[in-house]
Amino acid sequence: MNTGKLRVIQDFEKLSKEIQEQIKLTYPEGFSQHLIQFTNKEGRLVSALPFETDEKIYLVRMTNQEAIEIILEDDDYNDAGMLKVASKEEFADKYAELDYMSDAVNDDEEDEVADTFVEPYDDDDDDKEDD
Image (tube, rainbow, N blue to C red; front, side, top):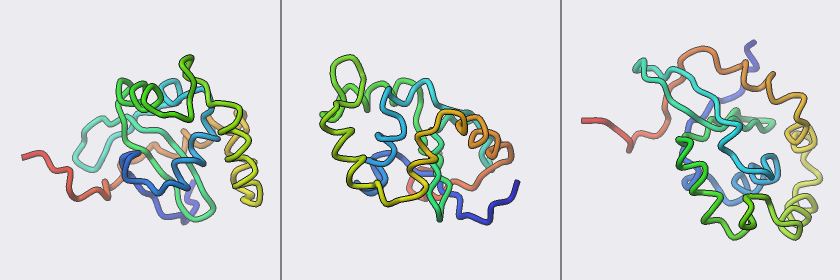
């Protein structure tokens, strides 16, 4: 499946605040159970959280432990790891006009998104090099 969209691999912390909020809205119960694995261009197995906008397909690079820590440290999530109602309502109102957000929160499409990441991807984060 070739969508022609730009494919981006990036760390969660380096994403814009808006994309982070949209990801939180898409994954209100946390990230760790939604991680996928793929082989990068160096042949390494990498885990990441998939997220798609109208223009880009993001693979948000994180390990299972990092996914858990992000949620634990984020004030938008409660102690149970669930997106707080106030945050969910704020983000839903803020991004309601984005067509892709209505699709992104539909659990039925999650497997379809994961299936698009079967080939090696270039890692756009140049400052993460193994020496």
